[in-house]
Image (cartoon, rainbow, N blue to C red; front, side, top):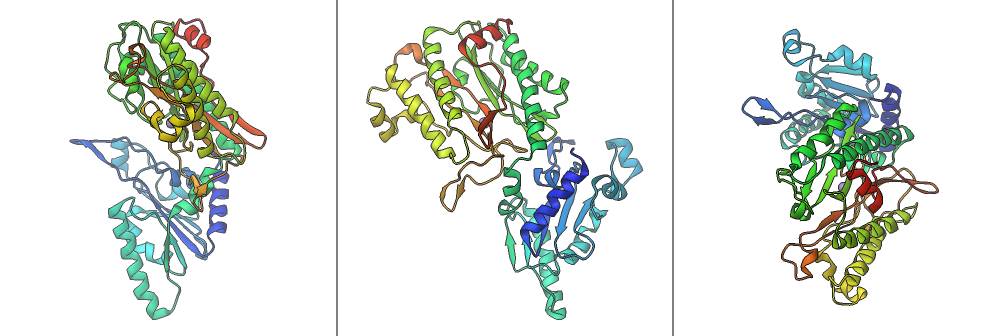
Length: 436
Ligand SMILES: [Mn+2]
């Protein structure tokens, strides 16, 4: 976590932004995986962004109108027996001492105390619909406080506002300290991709390559992968969300790896595609050079004022021109773009925001128009080409899937590429041979 003063400053900025309001942020409920095994807990990004607190069963309440308690954490109380089994808890005192909130209470007191924090606020900032059971508790508290305020005349919330317009607008703009963590997440991710490239070879299984990624992430202090790693060889590279990672690689395969670590709650999201035997075949190389040219052109276009839609148009134009050149599309470039036939080979978008969530928060449109980039935005650039095994094209291209993805920060002067994994044909081939 950052220094507690970082979270205090964010909370103050949020309360300033929302005027008369109360913010209620519940943690993600602990989910059963199977039998008595639970899914690993990972704090809700909004709570972590505003407190650094990472224990489950927590609720963060922020109020701009409460006289003393501008920030309150409801937490699991200290419990000697539970801590012997499940490990340390900060408890009520620790939540105040370590995370710098004004007050903390046991999570069991939430229902009794929440109405007090709703009272006096004109607006409730809460993400309805994310978590049905908790929605019910919030609405119950709201009914209670409305009944109470009919008698004493105090203000009650008359609007419930999505956190998208407050917290998520703040999270979209990365601070310098956040960018430093994202650079580190990318540096660790580079170690993983390089190890994976060295390990890949004909007859190796996809999961053996995946193990190299995970080893590099954990060995360098990353908490976990930011999302399930995609390690798809041969035709599996054309499956956009392939996750089985259990096929044996063959001589002549390309291997597509989409994997990034989460480091101190920030995600990296990087894709590379390379020949497992260390040398691209002519058709693989031809398609790879098209995707790389598209990615280079997109990255070059990132600067304040550019938009995701504009970047996507650049990708579509370069990819379609390449497909026409290579004979996979048999019309003019303009006709293929106009009619959308390029989508047979490029069916996804080029970018998403990146941050604490891999598909990070922040709207991509403002008042219906594509949102212009500003310094502090971070996005992915990930063009690709995917030729189905039964595509009606020269058979040498069938079953080839290629994507190249980097993480790009928008700066005042243009952009900074946070990703450092090799991607030129020569560098990728050298890395697979262990020569880089
Ligand atoms: Mn991505």
